[in-house]
Amino acid sequence: MDDSDDLDACRQVAFRVAQRDCGATAEVLVVVEELLKEEAEYEFVVTLLENLQNLVSHGLDTFRSPHEIRLLLGPRSAICWETVTGFWAAVAAWKVGTGAPLESAATLLGVQNESLRMLLWTANRTLPTGEKLGIADAVRYEKAVGSPIPGFSHIAVALRITGQGSP
Image 1 (cartoon, helix red, strand yellow):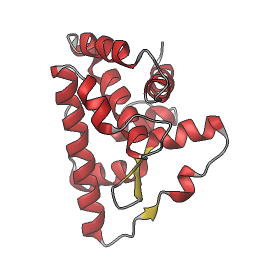
Image 2: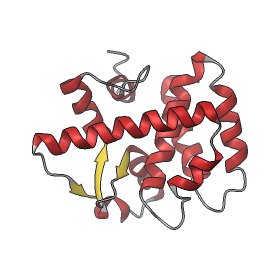
Image 3: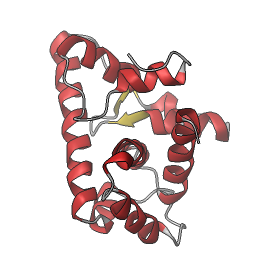
Image 4: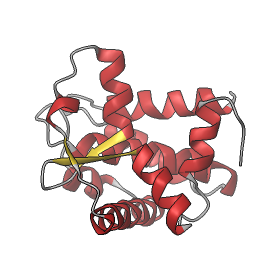
């Protein structure tokens, strides 16, 4: 698969695994743990876990809670999970520090088209305040501060999505 296929696969797997009625969530997370034994799989796993975190951040009844997912993670996956959590906390603090207003997640969560919903819900996260952050905020943060997730850059992901390759 090429990089765009990987991004789509991560989005689709995360969307399914996050759902409460998915009976294979634990099994998929065991595979994620195994993938982390290979350094070459790190970016794929971080993308998947970030999409999963974003989905469960929305607090929707159809999805498991962040706590439920966290309990299913192996030790390597848990480290990645916490790294992603820390990154997004830094993005939120940076954005608040810039004085830029945060938008409500309500509009995002009201999207009815399933394909668009999958794309938007995996690319954005809802903060405990009900406001949202998205990949555009992560890219701005990385450009301003220069602190991506170790070994994973949202700038590179954005460039791949737009067909421009790596930075």
